[in-house]
Image (tube, rainbow, N blue to C red; front, top):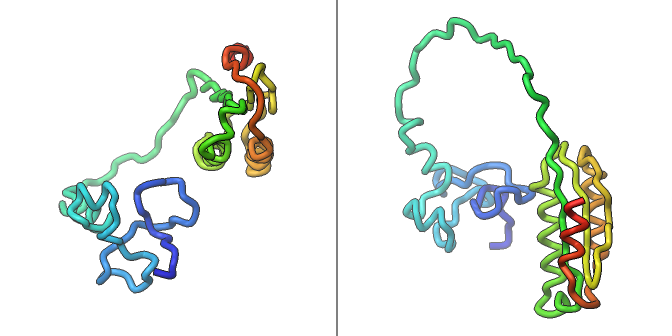
Length: 177
């Protein structure tokens, strides 16, 4: 079809543009929200080609009558006992000449940028290291607290090129500092 889906396809939950669960043809009028029962994916394989919305609607949690239990007290008091530590992520990337073949360099750039854009937790710290015969610190630890910081990290990764020999040991030592 000539349209792009904006409903789930349950392959990459972080995909941009996905805003809802896909549903059966008779439940939706917008073709972008329709379930593709012919797609070769795990949802179709394990759920008999039913849409994500159908699977959810048919789950026992949604079929049971809603309990009329009364909530006596809905106020909670929380006390922070231990300040949670911030995640610290060091991404170490091979940029040696072996990365020139089979589109490896572009695959590395795409994978790391995908991770930075969609998986790296806001509030974590991230550092970038590339290596050939030795390590190169592309970015010291930076607090990931805005889209601008994510863009900065992704721009550093996107500039990488392949060349030189391979020595991962120095990069791992640098990452452990």
